[in-house]
Length: 385
Image: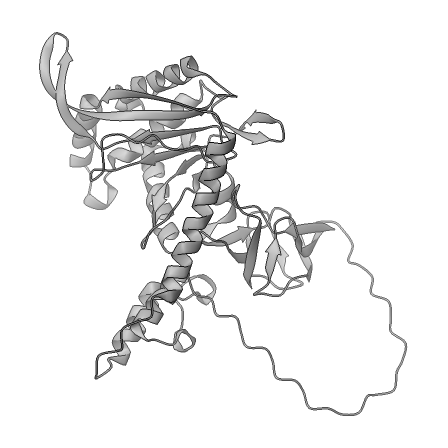
């Protein structure tokens, strides 16, 4: 009999709230199936099962705050016999009693949709959700509010719930980053990368594509990091006990800012093996689900390194803090045009400041420098990405 336990969905997570079961006793599940939905300080997470078999018993009721590692369900694995249930001795029928009313169903609604419902004065219990398992999403709330069309302006919304959720996320981030700075000896390195070749190649490539199929420059940066990591497995690692263990796969965590503040950094699995089109699709899907609070447990627990990018509206450089238990994090600033000498000529070129923060217990400045050079080299041959 296998135990399905409350997973640790981040180094700073000590407990989570079971929001809902997606499966029932007697249901057959396969490895990777979504079995439950869990709330953490950062997001609502769809939790996958890592055993195949039949659900024997659910041990925890929705709404319960559960420490990580606590068994939530029992799964009879493929080939195992069902547990025998001893026959009960005959008993006299009890006096008739009125049946207890069934418990109210658990309301599946994302924190973002819940906040919006409060702001618009819409009762979530009256909304039919269009998301997985009937989950209520922002668009469902907006549609319900439009149908209601109140004749008089609603009273100003109470921001307490939104502030509480955002404050909880900020506390979780603060705890993780404080631990990182306290326990990890950071070494920071940076370099400036000429993106002339990458920019030209991307412009030519996108010109031949329909608008929905075009690539973002950030996808090239992520892929370059993933390919460079093949040469630097010591930086694609996570602490396990007293040692850092190199990951068997390269799962790049991508920092995504959330509406209303805060961020998450879920993983794009096997990033180095994906084509740019596959990577673009995964990236778009991840951003959409992250902002809809619909991420999966493996995406939150599997990153082997993180990439954070400021984007076109940010500053020119960022020196990020390592996300435990990872050992490195890469940052990219805003792409800017700068004077650049190329083959003896002074040109105006698009450049980006790339940085890496490394756990000095695992690698040193020389190693980190070589890693940044490897990223640079790959961006000079964008057609090979």
